Image 1 (tube, helix red, strand yellow):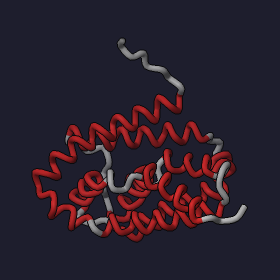
Image 2: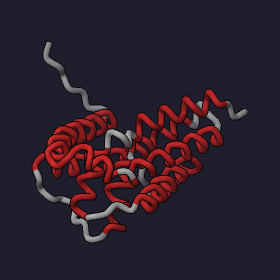
Image 3: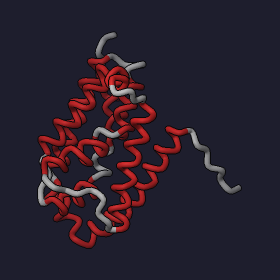
Length: 194
């Protein structure tokens, strides 16, 4: 399958929407506030490696541990749920012992290389070539790195009050995403009132 610019752009946009690094800015600022520093290189590299593993050996890799994609997605939804509760309630679930640990959990996984982006990569493989996905993934990782490096700029623009307000709003949004991911993965239906 030839690599076409239109396909690369399509895959880039799909992954950009699913990774949603710009929507994660308040969460990233919150993590930085707790730890004092974010290792942009480490977080980007770890999330890139995770996505590469899923691109070339996703399901076999999970099967190695006896885990299916659905179970992996549910586990990611629980991590997102706890992170959202931290932001809304101000309770600390994650103990940030070191900046290196923070760069991996919860930053690289599940925020950047979350269950949604990893399963999306598996889905994209059915339509696009691995090279197309790889190029689009590299482009997304450049954007992720630039956003992680620019957290100080976002902090200055938003100010302390703006960060607090966004933290609460995005905490609720993160809780909703976690619940949606859980419900979608488990197949549970919620009856909506007429």
